[in-house]
Image 1 (tube, rainbow, N blue to C red):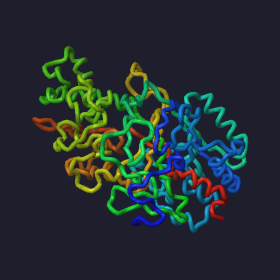
Image 2 (image 1 turned 90 degrees about the horizontal axis):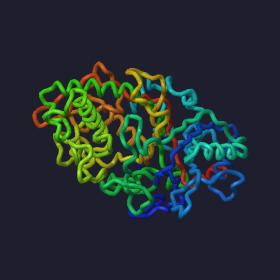
Image 3 (image 1 turned 180 degrees about the horizontal axis):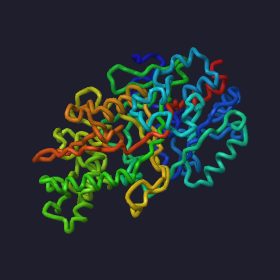
Image 4 (image 1 turned 120 degrees about the horizontal axis):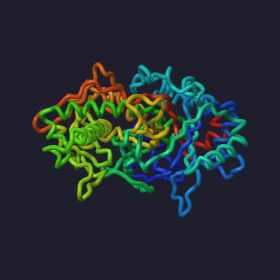
Length: 486
């Protein structure tokens, strides 16, 4: 960390969107993604290819998609590039530069697995083969399009030229949206992103305080007073770049649905059931099966902090479809200190406490992330008999920030897996994303007449791979291409 220097942008400065990779500040809204995990085989040719992605000659490399306005015709394929620390070394970036990069990035995701809850069957030894040898994960090339044919054609053209001599593809992670913005657990996703000062690229943004550019881009003031994350040497490599925690997260949908059944039955048998059922159902909801169906949705909402419709509990704690509808972004927890609307331990409240009172009082808005996620694997068939169906499905997630340790890892370690933001949940894990162990896990549902504790929460999300990457600016890509400081 360092105070702002002459190489940092002045407070209130605007950013040149044409110098920023597009996936940092704008969601593409393409229906499919393909992440190519690549290993550099020829450093000189790889540097030349990287420089060409920011240059004018499309015969050498496709053009990186930047954050500038596209006009009337968006690109058919959006193309972005992340480089791991091992990749920086494989490219031959001088040690005087690489040693100036942050420690978390230098060590990499696999080496810091315990900091983000990757133990047990989420440990790196159980990751997909192309992620198990982290020293060979050098580049993650991300392609977004609306059809597989467009992705295939783009990849084939790219690899038939300079790229094919520069690196080899070790693995592919592909995802596709279904049912709009729905993810495998049945929730709406990608509802909002932080709104950054002085920029307004297309998309939907939350109604929290405006985030300083230094929340996500290097070289700008952060939410921490008089602090700007240090730029590497030379500064051109870092300015307008961001770090990304790329994660392959398998989701146990059959296990999740089974837990909803069990928890709903327990709650229906509780004398506090009427305090939880949706509005109008307190005195009964027809048959036992209909009551269970209603209570299952209550449990799903309490675990997440939103109804599966996307409606936040902070604005509508008893009705998933309020009339008139409420905002899905303009809400807070400042009037819900006891968690009667949204439980203190719910996923959305842990990951982003908004303006609520927490133990780490200055941290509320300092760990905000840009989240880009898309499901992989086929949707779960609810008519399938109870139990695992043998199909892997989950989420391909990008968690983008200016500092991996102080933002992504701190959120995962302190809030998701320890509950340090409030002593009433300390010692419990996030009920959806956390590294839960059934024999020790618990989740509290507060009501006006008392609290109900659900025990035996399984681990629903298992890590299958990932890497810490750096998303260089367009200027930095050119610098790498011009021999990378050698």
